[in-house]
Length: 240
Image (cartoon, rainbow, N blue to C red):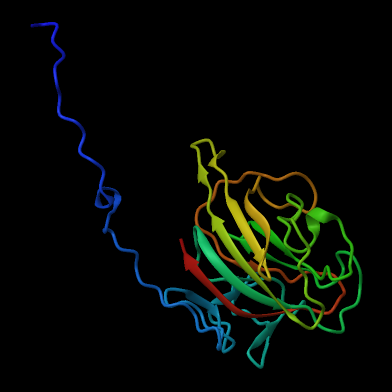
């Protein structure tokens, strides 16, 4: 009879293996040694305390000429900014920095520096240990754009750690962002920026500008404030 209910095969019962996949296998990365503070096995070591060969002067294009002593490089304000010779897209960046114990000054004139992502977008470095300043310019801010969620500064003389995850922008033909750059900043184990969209260049005066670009360097700032210069060590990067 046409009115009889037609029986169809029932779906096969789900088994654990139906939702498991085995390829592709993630590549094996050996993590850094926690005792020696070494970099992961697939990292690009930008500074290991022995030389500044990965860096160049932004002013002259020649050798980076900051002070190097006891495995640490210290800003030389007479030499200007330095940047990596190699350019990068998206990355994971690890960088350690220290404000000198004898630091003086206040607000922005106290251990001021910065890490520029792709040479354009500044994550602020500043001594905000018992030092007030405008919040979108304090330690861990996307400079003049995004206030950090916390103040995790260690006192002067102690080392601070930034772990930064950065996703490079994708541009439309007209130069506008199709996908803006985003950044996560972890300072001494505390999340300060959580996948925050960067609105454009981090200007000291004026609003952000969107400028179409490709891969870019990591730049470290030699700020012109009169306070004692800060130092850096153990800088490495993993491409994403």
